[in-house]
Length: 284
Image (cartoon, rainbow, N blue to C red; front, side):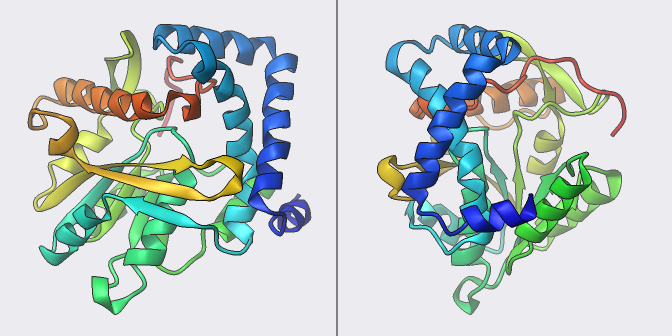
């Protein structure tokens, strides 16, 4: 599988997206469970028409572009809101990036590392992202090699990994989370997401309360015809007209509303087939 990934890594992005779009529709057609979940989630969020149907192909593109992003030559990346990152770096603040399963969420960390974490101009402040290693050994090996790059570190979804992320924020570095990812039992609360209770991590709110931490909402828009990506960055105050609550349950609900705001910017690129409303698994 690693050999296949490295072969696909040299394909042009537009061709990978074409392949991915076909694969997205194939998965949708062959999996009744996936199709039912996709339909329920889009209906719950009020996604209709072109955006709903386009999301099937976009989900496939998200998978097909990974070999290029992990092992291939750099892709074109534009920025909207990069000045907010520069301001946080000038003030020595830690940065908590909250990114939903929207667009290419892999590119946000990569783009930050390339632009802000590897040059003396920006203080060489790396980003550490929380991840849960895949259960399959080959996938874990591929992912480990793919994310070995300057300015980008990973922290496992363990207590040791949480401590690593807290230390990164205290040192004025960046941390990346997917707050719409379902956490293990005991590490979340039930909070509304598009009107339906969803088990929501409390970790994001805990990190956001770390001293001298700037909360930034970010996502990577996938451009048409393989033209690359645009990373959008919004400070919390720009999206939410209220400070983050001190109550954990209310803070989780606020973060869900912030993620809804981002998703509504480009609903066709949200991963609607993700099992967002599933019951949490046992264990960290």
